[in-house]
Image (cartoon, rainbow, N blue to C red; front, side, top):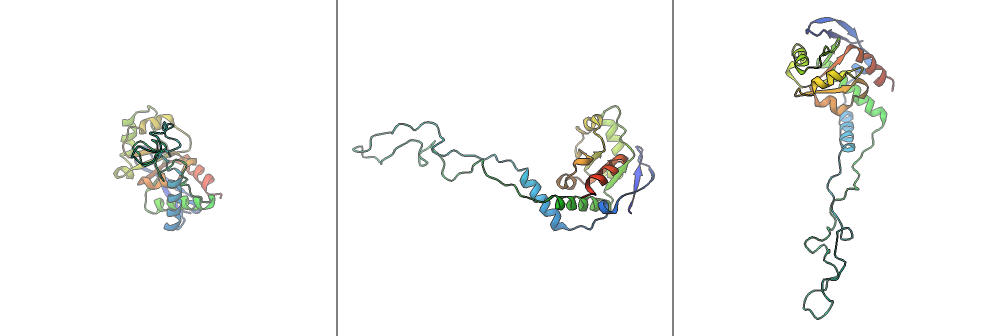
Length: 211
């Protein structure tokens, strides 16, 4: 079983902790991770672009001019697609579906691969606990500055939601917060380092190691 260093709030190594090889020592397969990332991003893609057809554009109920004897082309509605302000032909619609399906097993495998890759490159850090009892950004910033992750972006993960830690992290650039039982591949890849409190290890192994 892999052994990871456990740091205290002063940045000193307290001891080592064994972690599950089934979660933190999985060989990386980039094709699997890529497929899960593409699916997750597609499923969260908002469909914003939307155009109206001639049936949805307001107005145009009255025939602009009579059918014959005007010298002009025949027209039945001012909402025709060839008129300015008319409907749009073959325009983007908000009923488009970009979602992709990936089974749960593949999601779990990809997540374990990313966690294992973080561990393999020393970008996974275990902290005894987050000492942010005052909820101040400065306290959390000083604490993170003493850890090996100070040079890169960091995502914090805790076994239980700590409102003061979340509040303290909101004003820190390149720092995110996520619950230990809500990890996902995209958020883990978005940040250079993952910092978890010691209690989160058991949550991660239980949540992502049993399927």
